[in-house]
Amino acid sequence: MAFFPLKMKCLLIASESAEVLFHWSDREYRQSIQEKYGVSSNSLFQLPAFEDILSTLFAPIIISCSTLEDSYTSFTTENNHIYVLHQFDECLYIAVNGDGEEKEDDLRRKLYVLKKMVEVMFGMVTLSGNLLRKELRPQDTEQRARLWKYLQSLLDTYSLLRENDQSFLVEAVERLIHPQLCELCIEFLERRLVQQLNSSVERAGEEVLHAFVLVHTKLLAFYSSRNASILTPSDLLALIVMAQNMYPSNVDLDDMSPEVSNGLRLLKQLLVSVTISCFSVKDADSTSGSGPETFYTPEPSPSSRSSSSSGLLEKAGRGETPVFEFVDPEIQMAEDSLHTLEINPPDPASPRRVFLEVLHKDGLYPMMPHSMYCLSLWPGITLVLLTKISSSALAISVYKYLEDFDKLEKRLHEGHGGPASARSPLNMQDIRSKMDKFIKSLEPHDLQYAQLQNVWAEFKSRAFSRAGSGFNKDLIPWCKNMKTQLCGIYRQCFLTDSLSADVTHRLSAGLQERAQAMVREKLVDWKDFLLVKSKRNITMVSYLEDFPGLVHFICVDRATGQMIAPSLSIAERTTSELGKGPVANYIKNKVRQP
Image (cartoon, rainbow, N blue to C red; front, side, top):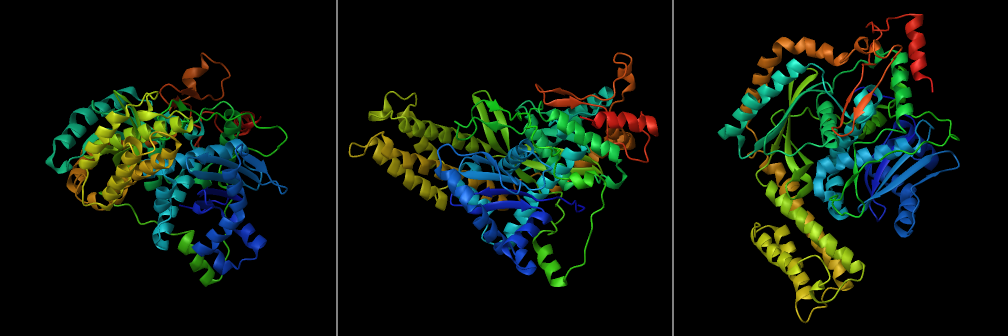
């Protein structure tokens, strides 16, 4: 991916003990840290040294947020650096902008996107700060650098899409408008592809739940099996980001006209105050996000700040060429080892574990494990398969018990105690019986199993025995401990063990190749048409009769999470419906005016 110049931007995840769990920062921010703290260039780009600087810099902010009851969520420093903070479970997320190009709403949205990506990558492990630390901060420095580089690349991909793709501007999925072809593809996915995959002995216990075809970021066809839950818009957008990160569309930014780029930027400013973000956050009162889905809606930005609202790729959008300087080879090597670390090309046969929302008859279950297969058909056209793994029932059980202990903890905080907590809607005797059966069903030789068994035995001794303290506030730490151990079982089954289990428990390479060949054969005659169609999905001509003088529109259906809009991404060498010359430039200038 090309280098896009950014200015004074930083994202950070920190633990309650002020330890940096993840950070992303641009070159200008790192250079400002170097100038401020007098760090040599050689040591600046060594991972531990820069982490230590960030820990020192952000420690007062993190500690004050963790100690104050009514903590602040944003502030501006004397040098006009904007800080936005948000506490997600046991971790503090921080976004910084120092060049005035982003407002608080832009930074807050970036935090929600970062949180969504972390949830998709790590699932319910995000509910335990200690376990999330182990995932985000592996002891091996090279492994940590690779992990951080991947998460950073996801954020870069999202930022690039938000700057250049209207669907990510309003955070809704855009479908290719061609009813006959879409219907033909959906029928093919249902009756041919998914049926053959799920009936094959090479699927290793996995079941294809969703199959969809992307043309760049636009959805050509989407099929879900009868046993599948509805895929939420936020999950689908996150998967599109991951697919684009794996197989970039190779957008030629040099060919994008300044008018189009500025038009997108203006639309962002106009829509930011009315757009509802699909990267949703859950009810803060629910530990694992089981409450009603609430969407982040930005407040109108204060007029006192004259800075324009733009994303992470402001300079690239303006068409400016990055300036590369020759530096000392040793410094360049140290820098490349972290900041331009090449990610190995993805193995097409290797699935990526993702955690998505699932709606069952008895409720909503967030962060359920799936396997994601991303198969490139041609450059710009991708087939994505989402499969249900054989042990997914265990994740549902873990989530139920997490909810039970969270509810009990809240009631104990409120002072509702007493023998067996008679006033509680929770049937603790029933939970006790089910938990005993659940622990017996686990692998007894596993270390995590032994830890869960020991903590559960201590919990029962304190809660149910006559010698115990019963259901009072003394039981709160043991509720927290039980939740941590349950998250540990989840981590062991779906993150740690999955690294070795995925070799055998996945769709075979041959089965994936056959699926790829089947879809290619079906779409080979449509390939070029689809790539052109994705550039200009719908035209304005059909709307001008009903709406004379209409220049541009974006229609978003929040009920389905979908949008429709004429294309603005027209390269300089391509003639749009407006044509070229003074008239076209005048209209484009009108679009980008406040």
